[in-house]
Structures are given as structure tokens and as C-alpha cells.
Length: 483
Ligand code: NAD
Image 1 (tube, rainbow, N blue to C red):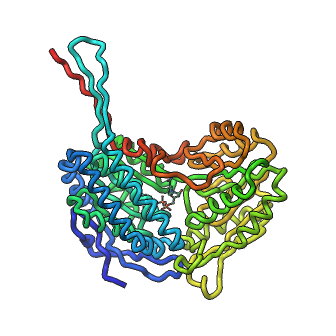
Image 2: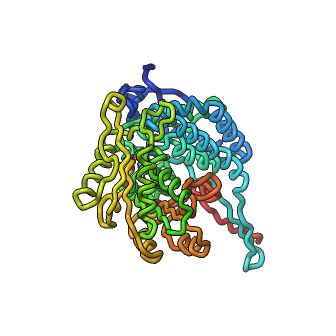
């Protein structure tokens, strides 16, 4: 194990005031992967002041020139893709092949927003009065605090910092304490491309309270970009209200996955398995959380789904052909297991998996046997809460009207999926699902070019698309009196 990993503040790799550290643990075997410096109050202040200072020059740089830095970061990330993916697997646990895909996808945000920076145009509004002109422009909002979760250690970082930097903002990023190494490696890449000091700072700490009390409420921070759980988001929103701080939130989900009787059977089956189990072992905000199958095909679909799940390979992320890695920590594994056990006590039938994996190759990691539960009802906690793990509750429905009502009956509204070959139904259902992302015969998620974000308690604002960069700007109207 190397020395203490330092954080990146004001263009320097520094140790935290007081010298405290925290450990990053490999969830596949609980070994300590790295010891990371544990930021304290003075470090937060240093990082915020650095971002504030750097804002003066960065915000007025020509968008094309800011874009050049972003393209440089994209290129270096691509060169170091496998190195970054190795870190992702080490600290997050996901299979190495999946980690490579994540890193490849994550770096695309720099390319997309480098181009979008050049399209941040304004408007010249015709005046109702003679002698006046109105001009509307967008300006960078100011220094940003970005807080990210552990499930996509690369994408969650780039999806925020790329648009922020492109818009002309500077950033203090607080990555999840479980996965700070990927974020630090991205900071090293930013440094190597010559990004001016203070423009992008990474503050590592495992003191969540301090982040809320010092970073997110710091008067020099003008905007918070937060991805994480809805409950933590609510607390941040309450605190932010005191300063009317600008907010973008990407929060929790409870995605319905609907299989209509006229679906392309194989596509729906593959989509359901992939969207439930093959994204970070089900620990993704857009993972299928409730699988609704139309009664007329349940007899065929359910056994095929169970067979497919039984064939999934659960293994440490570096094992060849691994499909499902460990869960991030014991707390997450215990929560998934509690939801499965609770569903069984309420009458659900567990037909495969649903237990801790033991034995030599699993002994020290947080592995869980992929579970399928039948006879689940909408009122069970497993159908109401975000499972965030490899457990699939199956629910049966009869009509389109009914399934839309049931799918929408949740406080969340992030992602939903449905499969049908009836094109009029496709349009109807897509329009009626109350979700920010709807996969119609598709379970591949989103891409850089489209806005991504949640309805209801799943979030505020959008990341990606044209909207992603607007989140980091303020609109200004200039009234020109020509006298
Ligand atoms: P979390 O809310 O526990 O933590 C997210 C981040 O917030 C971490 O960096 C954490 O250290 C920090 N944090 C925790 N408490 C805080 C506090 N009181 N003040 C300030 N910061 C605090 O979430 P998690 O367990 O890391 O991630 C899982 C959650 O994230 C799930 O609910 C998932 O749905 C959600 N998520 C949403 C999206 C999306 O795009 N909508 C993407 C990924 C994850």
C-alpha cells in the first residue's frame, strides 16, 4: 500500500490539517486499498477560497479555450482508461469490464460539454419602447460544490464537473469516501493537461457533517450539485434554503420495468436482467426496482427470467467473466437482505438467491446471491423503497391502465422501462409514465446528448444534454437605454 493519498487543492497535492486519514476498502475482500487524507474545516476553507480566486480568470476565458482543456482531459482519460477502470474496480467492486465501460462513457461528458460551451448563446429581444434594447445572456453561476456517490466513481464526477467547467464555473468536488481514488486520478489528469490551479479541487473527507456545515453552506459557494440519496438531499435543501443556494439534485429512484404481453420476449428478458443485475450489481439509481409482467405471459416470462438469473456469475471484479461483484459494504448488503426477508414474511416467494454468499472465494467480500421474488405486492417495502442491490421483485398485472397507475404510485420518478410491439401503446405509455427517463423497448439508460434527471423526489434539474450546462449558469437581462 502506498503512502497517504493526498487531496488536490489549489493546484497542490496536500495533506489534511491535523493529519487524519481514512481507509478505502476493497469490497471484494475487505483489504485496505489506500489510506486517504481526511479533510477538515481549514481544508474546506482553503479549497473554497481557491475556487473563488480561480473563478475570476476562468469565467472570462473564451468558451472555446475552456473547451480545449476539457478535450485535453477527455483525451488523457481515454489514454488512461484501463488504469482508471482498475481503480474503479478496486474501490467500488464492479467487474473490470463494466468499469472500463463506465470510464469510457464518463470521459464523453468532457467532449460533449466542450462543444456545448461554444453554444451558450443569448438573445436580443425586440423592445416595446423606442430607444431601448434588451439583451439576455447567460453567465457562470460561480464556484460550485459538487458532492458525488460511490456507485459510479467516474461518471458521477464527470457528469458534474464537465458542464460546470465548460460554463465557466470552478469546482470543489467532495467524492464519496468509499471511492475517492478515481476522483483523485481524474484530478491528476486535469493537472497534467495544465488546467489552471484552483479551477478544479478535490476535497477528500469521510466527515459528512463537515461537508454539510462548512462546504455546502459556505457563502462563497454559489451552487450545489449533489448526487446521492433523497434523504440526504432533503437535508441539504433545508440548509441551502437559508442562502437560497442554487441546487441540482440527482437522487434516488424506484424504477418500474413493465413487460407487456406483446413485447419482444427476448429483448424484454435481456433488458430486465441487465437493468436489474448488471449495473453495479443493482446498486444504480436507474436500476429496475419493480418488474411488472402481464399475467398472460407470466408463465413463460418468469421461469425464463429465473433461469437467466441463476446463470449469472457472481465474482470478484478482476475474475474473468465476472458479471456481479460485491456490494459496496456490509450496511448495503444487510439492507438488501432485510428487504428480501421482510418480503418473504409478508408472503412473497423467494425462488432463487437471497442469501449471503460464503465459501472461500466469497468469504471476506460483501457478496450476495442474486434474488428473485414472486407474488410481490405493491405495498411491500421491497416494492416501495429503493432496493439498491441484486434482488428482483416480480409483480403481475392485467391491464395497461392498471400498470400505469401502479408504476406511477411512488414518490420517486427517475427512470421507467416498458416493452411492447404496439406502437400506439408505446406512445401512450411513454407519455403517461411520470419519470424523467423512459426506456421504451430499451434498457441501456441514457447518453451524454440527452438531459437526465428525476421527477418528484428523484431530483431537481438535469445533467447532460443542452440543459446540463444551463444548470451552471445564471440568466441576466440587460436593459440598454440609448437615450
Ligand atoms: P448518500 O446520500 O449517502 O451519499 C452521497 C454523497 O453525499 C456522498 O459523497 C456522501 O459522503 C455525501 N453525504 C452524505 N451525508 C451527507 C450530509 N449530511 N451532508 C453532505 N453530504 C453528505 O448516497 P450514496 O449511498 O453514496 O449513493 C446512493 C444513493 O445515490 C442512492 O439513493 C441512489 O439512487 C443515488 N444516486 C442517484 C443518482 C442519480 O443520478 N439520480 C446516481 C447515482 C446515485
